[in-house]
Length: 473
Ligand code: NAD
Image (tube, rainbow, N blue to C red):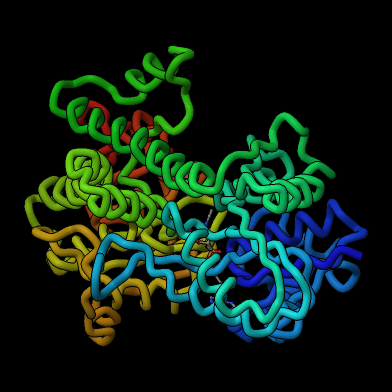
């Protein structure tokens, strides 16, 4: 029986391995992690991440050919194919701080693999890593090999949180990069054989290692660039009376452009876009490509600008101050159908409003109160240095100004304004007349995701703002 082990039981490691186990009943899949509570959660009825369809997939194979374990070294030792899906966040200090990828988790995983391996292995980069990382990993593995042979492959993951299971079932493409040696080609074929159980052959793309590593950064940069492009247009729409939804529709109808990823919003979030673009910027700078680096920097800059613009609009609409006013925040996750708040636009928007002494009442269907308070105490928005600023905000100050509640009606009761920051479907179905009746007048709604029917809200009596739309008459 082929043995697969994955180091890292996170948003990527957990679902991707569950899908491999589901589709390959004759392969044993073990997902390992140093975070014991996370492993315990994977082994319980309460999985550590919320993802539509994930429970069913895990339940179908857990205990049969899918296992979660904190006994990392034992399972790494005799795996045939070893995926490494550890986190690769942005470095917060030292050389490249604020841009470069922090590869310390990767490095320690590679050293551990070299130390404990008892059989030859294919080591698969599942994490998103800077181009040429495989070269560094090869060095670590091959210097400490104890006679074991390793082949490195790059197999970046393209799933999106919220649709991970669908994305894994029917991927647009699976990318496998490897060395162009006979051993490299054999390793590529072995991984291809795994995916070929359910992915059509024409969707499995093989290439050299560096192209595969760079393709992941390029894909995320270009997706984020589309969002920043339409968000930049939204500012111009508001200044001129054009409607960004109509503009996006017209642009997207061009088959060369396509309609996806053209929804204007308060800004993208998530653990990947910002970190991967900043990483790309850093790699460009290291290669002396300053102009190229500056080009990609603008994508992140526009995203920060969009969040700042939203906060300014809220404050200026509400008679230039939100001090002491209750603002309901509907949605805190970075997108719908996930409980993930990493780099969520809501964090910066809340900080902006707290900076003007607002009282926030926050509701999100999937994010726990403890997570929200932690996020708000770890990051502080700085208008002058919006890029990646990590400052400490006193938790006691936060809890004086922030309450986290368990439904949208409670959040909006007695509020002066409402901000919609995640596009949860339930926000489209709310009884807005009831919400209006419970609010201070004039009652404001700021739709950061363009999900609600503004005309209907105006008829109720709300003063409304939507991204990139004509302002209230
Ligand atoms: P995550 O933080 O949810 O999970 C990473 C896990 O690795 C953590 O549970 C951590 O405890 C574990 N880990 C770290 N070092 C370890 C070690 N030495 N041994 C064992 N376990 C260790 O991260 P994630 O969201 O799953 O992302 C993982 C990688 O995949 C990142 O490089 C990310 O950029 C990339 N990626 C993420 C997504 C996404 O949507 N989240 C999509 C595509 C690619």
